[in-house]
Length: 156
Length: 250
Image 1 (tube, rainbow over the protein chains, first blue to last red):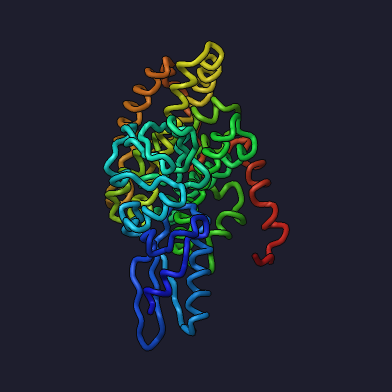
Image 2 (cartoon, each protein chain N blue to C red):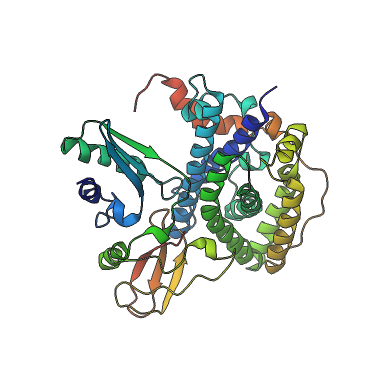
């Protein structure tokens, strides 16, 4: 039941993804006092986190859970490694290239970014326009084959 | 005499807050759209990190202090940020050079804080380092592009480097409180950070065909609340709405 409700809360920026797909939900607990949901922020300044918290409250209230607590934890820090395979596929279908491989922790400073596949035509002939795209979590790429620009969900 | 941990937390928080505030000034004024967006996102990262640190500082202060009250209702002399962060936005070259010098320092500082014995600083550092890695890469690439660019871009960014250099000494200052925190394993050794910073800065400047300025007299005072003439204007802009409507509810 709780899992189902959490699956109904979606990312305000990318509504095809739920907070479960994103790996934002760390844990939850239900006892006689009510429900507690523990979440972790993606990027430090992500403005969607306040909306996500409000949406969690709304979803649970509407389902009749009057006693709900939403707690935010920083440790361990969120990583794109926690995004589900299903989530990655949803991103691709939506036109955003999903994070390619391991988190940025495995990359060294000034290391090379791995080749990113175009979500439109699947070509690997892509190039970075800017590592900072429409939101803090995305980079802007262009495809040299189909010539379309696209967002890439950065590894972190 | 303020608790050293609180002073140090505010030092880190104010660096992020003032950096974020200055970078935000580029929003809508970037030379090209993609870089306007890039800097706005970078500024947002800094503000997010400032929030986490200010929340921790407010927790330490207790007595009803909040992140907002710390950001908007402190006077100039109670801010602890490095002087470099409050300098005006300047031209694009000035901004990327300042960002590069500070981001590189910030990267090694946060890397060291990953080992901090303070649980909350450690958690914040673990979060921040992932974002800072992207900042440091972005600013270094721009320094190289402008330094090893056209004759004009080279001259202009060289001027910025020379103007900013006297503000880099302050990065590595220590005092009794800082040494105490280092002895307790809470804060890193800024001597060690200076060594790492020097190596990386020299490497990137060489790629940018820029000469490292000689170390001369260094500006100082931020940690003691003795700020430059620019800080007052920055705070006036940042604080005037909450101060005009202190009881406003969002």
